[in-house]
Image (cartoon, rainbow, N blue to C red; front, side, top):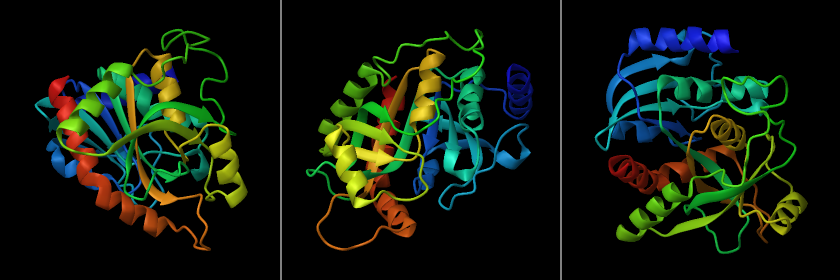
Length: 270
């Protein structure tokens, strides 16, 4: 992986020479956030050596370099998931690339199903911890000391200073920002009613199919991570409705302006 990483980073630097300070990963339906970035360069994933290609609707599939809040940033417009058939090392490869491009902080977003009864569709939740269920840990296998330690600590997977900053910005802008625990599952099926209930019982507030492998790898490399979920559906419900991916994308699109404001203000204040 080290050789592949060096080759990928060298290619990207040949296309964009500035050093980004912040890396941003955009989840399902949140690609319009890129309009907030003063774009300076775009590279499709298909052109980047060793990069997977996103196969999910709602993911553009490119790296976008530019300015946000006065800071140099690089945004992943589309991420990779275990359920697409990629192994976890492919899923997290771009996060290692972003670190070696020079980023100092990592912002992540995702679409998630709400399980906390106080949550409704369109809410934003800052993630303060996570539970990983059935997901293969991306650090399994030989450890590369160049990346980080064999047994990384995960007592603070999401940087507390970034969480407090987001909460302050939300308060200043009268945004109702929830805070809670994200449960990671593999997907691609949405959860059964019994599964939603079980995940709530073990401490989850929302559930999704991404983010956790990326955050594990960020912590492995000493990269501060901040993540926010858009509640795009409510899992624990009485009525006999079903959940579709199209509804998830629509809910994410409607909540995106609030997420964009928080990310932009955080970039400006770092």
